[in-house]
Image (cartoon, rainbow, N blue to C red; front, side):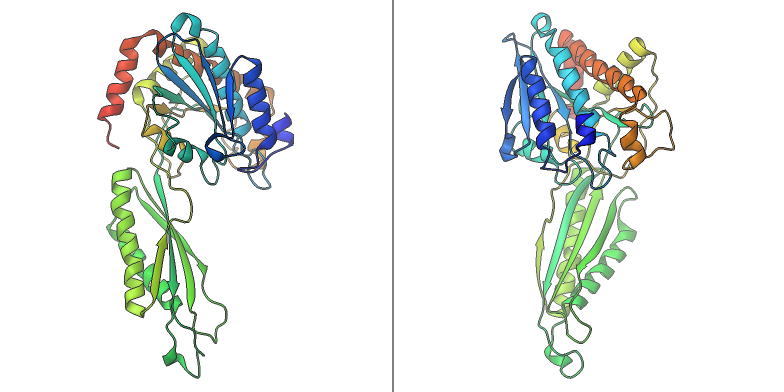
Length: 368
């Protein structure tokens, strides 16, 4: 309730981070704050010292501008905390260890990306995040994403009296966008390229000496995305060459890898849900969005199943209606079931070396 009433944007989740870390400490976890340089990032560790696999549960807690917790990250965090404490209670028998990671700014800059790059998931054997939605569904895929920015530098001049003295940076942007539009015909159907002119000049009677174009380039696999991004960059280089401009190509936001669901782990989660709660998950929806959990899923086996908090498919994510749904008894019951299923799924893997082996064999053989 407190997080719902006081929603915080990415990197500003001071209250949420404090509530999370204090909860973990009360339950015997060793907490590291300001993880990877983020004021609100944290990890909470529980380790009995007995050998065994290392389980990670992932918490999110950032809200959306104006909508508050319209994506339900207040419940994502609560699920991870509940699952972490539940699993910790049986580690004395099973061995192994559990870490709850609190990653800031999933909606914008993706704190998990920095966690991965800093080696936080090195040695983690499986990672689970449960996300609220309007139905129960299996963990699915997401697109790898690369943000590409072109800045074109030309030379200003009076557009009417001395246009020949100008080098038009807007023309460079237009040539680039035309080339990208032509490229779209020749990319895979599951790839996406979309962008804007972020800066197109200052006045119609001045030849623009500076423009800025920003694109999101997405693909189902990181390998193909790398190829596609280079082709998009060539469009910008062509625009600069054709107009005589200089071009600077940068990444203007954090890049996300594709989500690689570990089907062995996902199937086990579904079995637990059905056995204990009679819940049948639906197949994952086809999605063309992106998430920073994708970066985690390429370094260790990971899943992100969806749990129903609305009972009403007409309520969509990123709405005030979804935010309000996080406060209902129905949502609380579903969240408890999801958290328990997370903990029980991890416990089964800890108790069965053959299951862990199967999870990792799939991970190692999967196309990245």
